[in-house]
Length: 610
Ligand code: G6P
Image 1: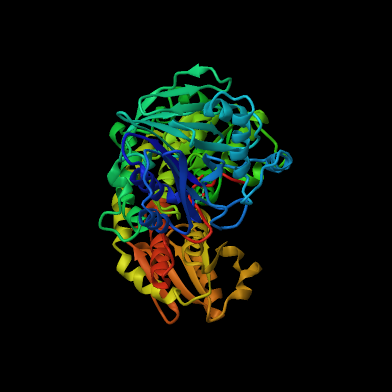
Image 2: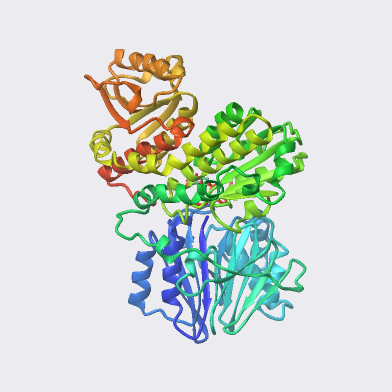
């Protein structure tokens, strides 16, 4: 979490920094700040709240400079105050930091002993003082001081540092947090993510773990972990500026919900074009690896975990392989049993969620040999650490609440399932053709589900006044109930819980009365009759039912039972289609409650802390 951006140019960089910070706000939005070099001094502006507020103050104060750094914060060490906002400064050395320094307390003690004083409660301020200390005691310049300081840090960091005494350079370091350098003409940039600098350049270098770099106006030098110069490949980013703009939409979440037919079509494009589910979708060596595995272990967090939870049903029933799914932050700290013949699948939209990354490393340390990453961000840390990769093609997802990333993860996981089924003799040619046809129809079915929006708006208005909600599903649709409850709670702050419908009588039924709306995902599958019985249990206690069914479910609305039908039953892909109405319900309930849909309180999109 936290986003950083920096620039050195022959023009005023403040607009670049501010624009960059606005694009990085998904990484945290507790406070923001910039520091720029003015002759002989560093000028800083910081504010709690959103970047626009800091931007207004910077404009009012007339802050300009050709070298500068910026930061948007998600608070970890120290509250949401201006004093804790970045940049932090130590006598002319200013820096911004993404990550967590684990030994900050020892370093703080040491620096206090050396006469430094602290203005904030952050772990970051120690780094500024440490660099300043090295500049005073032997380091030849800012780069050498940064290289000496990071050797004394444990933890994770992406850093951008400037000094009033060295107006011709910006120095940066990376360990455990993403950082890339953007290459311009007579100007160079640094950022947590390419979206922040796309208005200036598409040519980027992804720094590797332990790298440091020095940026001047006319060049970039990168150094490896041993401080020796290294060459890192240049990439041309294909992220489109349009994908970062709202266009006609009111919120990114709304835009991203409506982009799902396109995002899904792009994600399944290779399979549809080839007319078959080919193992090469997951990498050149995938066939031999996937044919040799005997089971699947899925590790993920948040919404991605619910995608994995859905895939478990597919993998066991279609591919005939055992599959278990675990929350990454739990797995990484338990004494887990490892079967090296099981494929470890990590699922992550961002590719940088710390718990998922650490769970992957832990799985490898336990002896897992084969790993596969399903990810939406090219060149991010988790796919880079994985043997096989499948990129979802959702495009940039900016709303904190994940939508199109989830449904495209499901599409990728379904493709993995059928590939495994073929390689393990469980899916024959006829079944493959059937799955292909279901996949082909998926974007259209999702579009039909989006067309239900006006009916869902009417429901959402009723939800807006509620304090609690229950979501029920069974089988493949239980994870969709979980995802629906998560969406509702994260953006409306209505307390919502999901249960497998059969579990209702073991506790949650006690919560049901006239004030409790109960959302039921009830497509026409083999569990429909069971779900109907569970609904009777709710109705008998006065609970109001809001049922998402499909045309074939044969439901009638009645007193206290509201029904919306998705157009047709989508077979095994029904969970993807049924995700759309629960996303729309949460979105419109949030609109009715007036919450900040794209930036819900206390959350961030990219979670690079424990
Ligand atoms: C955060 C986001 C969620 C996301 C989760 C996992 O909590 O707000 O939307 O599902 O992280 O993120 P990942 O990038 O690993 O999928």
